[in-house]
Image (cartoon, rainbow, N blue to C red; front, side, top):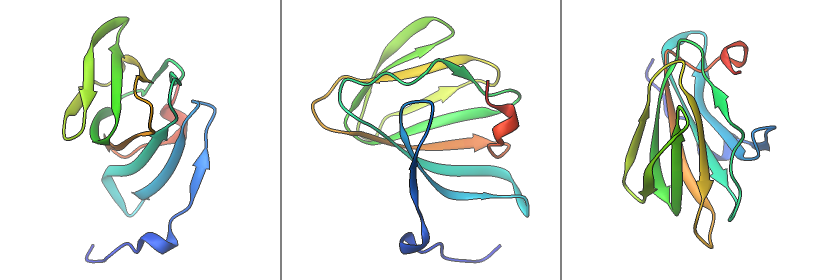
Amino acid sequence: MKKIIASHNLTEFYTVEKCFITEVLNTEEYNFFSVAKARVEPGITTELHTLKDTDEAYYILSGKGEMEIDGEKIGTAKENDMVFIPRNSTQRIKNVASEDLIFLCICAPRFKPENYF
């Protein structure tokens, strides 16, 4: 796949996870990984969830988030930090700053709604 994905073609939507998501790359034709931009408002903790058989990494673009994986608070991630979440782990993040927490969600293989629990 050779292409530029223009940002004006992307749409942000609110999820039951209590965050806003913009799907950047997630297609069947390119199944190896997906990329989405997440936005969590100040003071919000996302819903505890698991991605079945899917590794995930968060790359923090701005803000600060307290990360929990498998019931353990692993620390606070800030701008330019990356958090690795192994497949089948429970996870959630809390925005501990006064501005929006914005990060990229990189999933491998690509995110599929049926793998979200």
